[in-house]
Length: 195
Image (tube, rainbow, N blue to C red; front, side):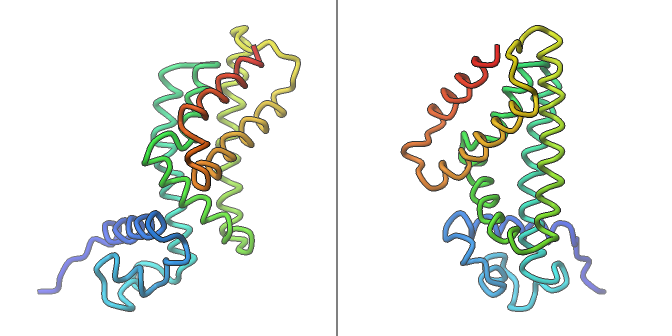
């Protein structure tokens, strides 16, 4: 009787293996051969699940974003306005080991997205969704009188994005300086400047 294979479970295993390699050795270690070995597959055993390395990296990036959104949605739903905006930013910030690993994957992904239209489109779509969420939280905060600055919402959202994405890079490259405590201090100072 033929063996029944759960393709989605195998794809998740491969994606987790990408994360493992990236966290230990960086994106350069994610060769098809190294990835197959990490996932416990024979060389060439990844082909039924992914066409090439870029498709695997895109899936790993999407997985990181899905995990972020999975945490983000309940955090936003439980609150509203400025508290929701704060929660959204915190979920994007590398404040713990899980989010730091996600940041490593995302930062590695950026290099590939520069040259691959498929990857840059995926990045643009996700960032667009998160910007829309930020705008919604900010609009609620303005209606509630929690945000009173004259700075336009577009500038606030772009500033927050620059800060939280900057934290991702800096937490990966300079973790001794970009500690979770420091990230939170900067975020709180920035949000306070809008009230």
